[in-house]
Structures are given as C-alpha cells and as structure tokens.
Amino acid sequence: MSEKLVESLPPRAIPQQVVSELEATDAIQQAIAVRGYNVERDGETVALATQLLVNVRGKYILGLHLSNGEWRIVFDTRDHLELAQDGARAAYEAAHDALYERAPSDAEIDWETTPRFWNPPQ
Image (cartoon, rainbow, N blue to C red; front, side, top):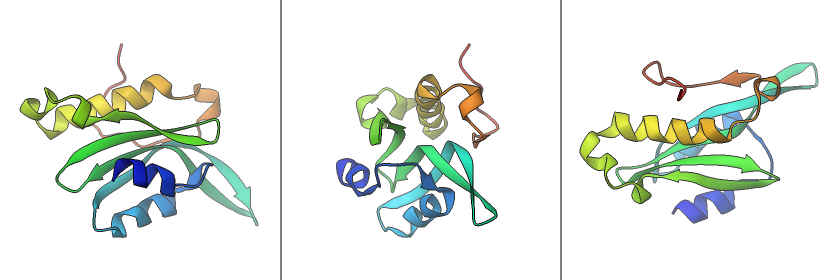
C-alpha cells in the first residue's frame, strides 16, 4: 500500500484539499499536510503541501517528503517496531521528528500543521 500511495501522488507539491481527499480512500484513516508553501492562483491563495503524514487504517503511519519532484517515505512505523509498545502518540512524534529533520528552511515554509503535543527536537 505505501509504495502504491507514493506512486499515486503527482511529482510536485499538492494542494491541502487533495491531501484531505486521500481520506476518502478506504485504506487511509488520516492524511495530514504537515508543511508547505502558498501560491497565488487566480487571485486566491492555495496552500501546497511538501510533507505529509498518512495513517494507513489500523496498520502503520508514514511520513512523506517531497524532494526533487519525488515523494519519498522518510518514516514508516513498520521500521520502528519498538514504537508499538509506546503507543500511537510516540509513533506520531517520531514521524513528525523525521519530517522536521528534512524540512526546508523557515524561509521556504509558509505554514506548518503539527499536533500540540509535539515539539521540534532539540
């Protein structure tokens, strides 16, 4: 599923609205646009996502990052089985940490969506 999901994404930043629409897929429980930038189109501001967090229903959490026109899996809970014992919050924190490590500079980010319980690694 994870490779199929990545291959289904266009090779560019995607509108936040499209990210929300991923949840209409039976396999996707939650899709969050984590970081991105804004562009002006036809007089309207459009938020484009360059990092995503995807919860595949009851199975695993993925952190996806757009780099050089290619979406890449930068975090997969299946590669971190120790997180299963620590619960969902630990998995979300680890996924956000992995995305943060790859985030562009603040000058290139117009918006960020992170949970209140998460803090950037020190």
